[in-house]
Length: 100
View 1 (tube, one colour):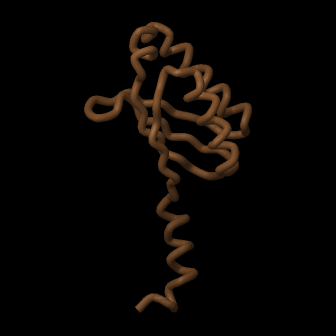
View 2: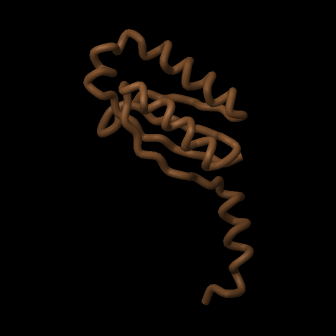
């Protein structure tokens, strides 16, 4: 399962309709589940209004998810693909002999 970190901000429309944010969160979680994954959303202070940790089967699933979420006009995101420490260690082990 591919992992992603979404850094997000509310648009002016999202702020205007902030009372609907809990319903939008539930819709995002449901959409991720329908795509075969899951989403956890955390609200933050600072440069970003929220951080979402998302697991989906592949990049194409994530692209569809982002298009659906962002096309509603309530949020804008920056998305990072992520690897766990064990996944990273496996990649490093595969190239270990070629690193000098």
